Amino acid sequence: MNKIRPPRVTFNQLRTLEAVVRHGSVTRAAKELHLTQPTVSAQIQDLQLSLEVDLLEPIGRGIRPTEAAQLLRQAALDMFARWQLFEEDLQAVHGLERGTLRIAGVTTTEYFIAKWLSDYTVNHPGIEIELAVENRDAVVRYLTDDEIELAVMMMPPQHLLLETLPVMHNPLVLIGPIDHPWVHKNRLNRQVLNGAPLLMRERGSGTRLATEAYLDEHNLQADVRATLGSNEAIKHAVAAGLGLAIVSQHALANDPAKDGVAILAVAGFPIKRQWQLVWRKDRRLSLAARRFIEDVRSLY
Ligand code: PGA
Image (cartoon, rainbow, N blue to C red; front, top):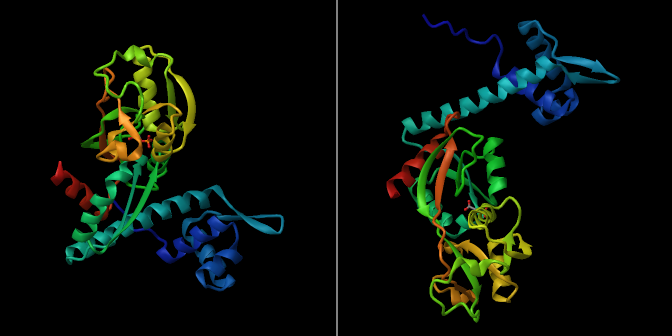
């Protein structure tokens, strides 16, 4: 027998409670919801009676949400999110796809993710896209905080339960300025990197992690000359002769000489890496995210 009992409260009451707790004020919540203050107070009062618990307590001249109110707000947010997924699914039953695709990619994915997304908008015109392009640390944070549903990255974090779909290869190459003496050399020994001037991406970058892992693995000590916050800044600095760098091959033009850089043939390069499309196993995905995964799966 199904033991689930319908809640004794209404969505309207929960929406009001959510706003009151978020603002910590009945007046501000009433303003946001375009309701009168007595209406908001009456809804909170009804909730308290239904649940037999205090939701607001007086503090000085104002009020403070109780612990029960905080818990109820979280439950309400979960229910609203679940309801939204239901509405999207319902529209899909009628052949109408609506919703928002919330996705993030590490910085190097900016060189190809737009193409994926433009194909996706053609196939799913009713779905809006919110794309964040940041370094690995920021993308992991968005995933942890549920600000996005999908992410494209090279090294998925260990602390989350994730589903992963390998997508493209992401070879990491060593680059130098176009007139560097190693340009016409063939397969130099990796020891040449000992003491070589190297430019690094900022802390939190996956490319930097991969670079450090490579140097550690081979016991190499590079001379880190500068830390730069983007692949573009790295390329400009390499072209200007500040040092060498390890970057994703996707960050380079088909002809790297156009950026004033050259790929150097040192043993062990390119470092073989791969991008993965990842999402949390312990979350129910929106229709928009499920469709995106289906589309990408059909490509790889
Ligand atoms: P990032 O990208 O260096 O911009 O963090 C790394 C990755 O491909 O995961």
